[in-house]
Every structure is written in C-alpha cells, then in structure tokens.
Image (cartoon, rainbow, N blue to C red):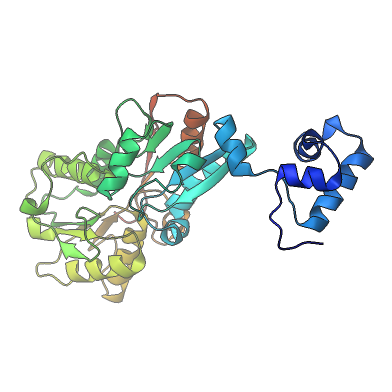
Length: 344
C-alpha cells in the first residue's frame, strides 16, 4: 500500500493492469462493467488511496460542474442565523439539490469571485453586495447570474415591491394626526455601528437597496398623512439582530418627546424594540405603535403580535433557483401580505 503516491487515472489503470476506460467506468459508468468487476476495481483503488478521476479537471473539460454559487450579502455565519436569509437558502437548496446540483455558499465579505468563478456554473446573488468589487464582478461575469432583492441589466431577478410594502405597513400605523414617528432602518448607511441618519448622509437614489426602497415607502406614507418627519429620528442599524436593534430602540425611546410610532425595517428589530418598550413600562399599542417587516414566525406568535409585511422567503429562494436552472433572464416580482397584528 502506498499512501504517499499521488495516483492519476492513467497510473492507477497501469498499476491494476486494466485500461483507463475500465477505471473510469468503475467510477462514472457502472453499467459498463459487471458488478463483481466494478467492486474489485473500486476496492483496489480504495486500498491504494485513489478515489476517482479529478472532478475539477472533469468540470473544466465538460464546461459544467453542477455547482451553483450562492452569494450572500454578509458572512455565512451571520446569514445562516438570520431567519429570513435561512428560509431563502432553504428554498434555493430544495430546488438545486432536487435537480442533482450542489450549492457553494460564498460570503459577501470577500472581494471578488476569482477564487470560485472557474469551478461553478453560475451565481444566485441574495441581496445587493455592499462590496463594490464584488458588485462589479457580478455585473461583468459571463456565467449565468440570478439576483434577488436587486437588479442587474439582462439578468434574471426576484423581488417584491419593497416601496409599496413599506408604504402599506406605515399607513397601517399612521392613524393619529399627532403621530411622532421614528424609523429604525437596516443598513441605510455602509457602516458597522448604530448611528443616526440625516438627509445629507443618504444617497440621492433611494432605489439602490431594499433598505432605501423601504425608506422611500415610509416617506411617501408620511407625506400623504401630512406628517412632519424629523431627520434626527432615523437610525441605521448595521445588521438585523437584537444586539444592535436594542441600542437604537433604547436611544429612540429615551427621547423627549418620545416617539409614539416605530417603523422597523425587520421583525427582529421590531421584536427588540418591543422588549425595550416593555422594560421601560411603555404600553404597546396604547402608548407606542410598532411595525415590522418580513413576517417571521416569532413576530406573528409574539404577544402582542407584530404588525408586519409577510414575504415568502422560501418561495423567493425556489423561484431564484428555477430561474437559474432554466437559464432565464426573466424579472419576477412576487407578492406580499400585510399582517395586521396587535402592535398598532
């Protein structure tokens, strides 16, 4: 037995005294050999430490790898813990694996796709990358790309109407003429800290991300209700987590006068705000109305339940996967539902 030797298809065939085709068939085309012959070859290969033809070389020859890169907007560790992102990934995986393909998770914190572009069949990109190098590479790569929650020219995409959905959510809470509104936004600015956002900090085009689309919806609802919104009552939260959302909610609910409506760009932010309000003895919805976004189970089962926009993240993932496998360039807009909870 030689553990040191690096076997190839040619050298293993020579060692076993059979043809290259016979070894290849043992691994890839079992119907071409008798059962006993195949088992004999596979056992001998295993004992020698050879586990089959080089898959990377095979992929390059065939021009396909049956691997789809799922590009995430943040670290894999963070994304798998987020209920919305994990539901989306479950939807993608269900379709991709059902069709005999595999998924490679690619962190959006990486600079570019050069490390994987030669080994995958294409990309499903969940959320607009904040990394400009990564965004530029996705825009120019020649392999199939499906974008989710943002668009690229001539590429398939899956979205919901975030602006209209946010407008609907805000309108459900803005029922008082004296509403004092604070907005707990999600990644309105490219920063890793919780901070206030002022008009001069915002990009001119509020269509660049789902956060800016949702902000545009909130702003439209405020205008139609003839409500004045103070720029200092807008926060940017770097990630949808209790840790960061609690900081923003603590600041907002410590102000004088205190806001009586909180528009939150995710349910996790809304739930954190609910806990802060409870700790301060603020009654929801009598003294404070809270609205979320996403429709996660925890928000719907909370007491009081959160008014939220329910989007089907699993369906979004399935749709993106099907568009990819069909090599489509279709742009799909999925529906959503306003869930009227007890928080407003």
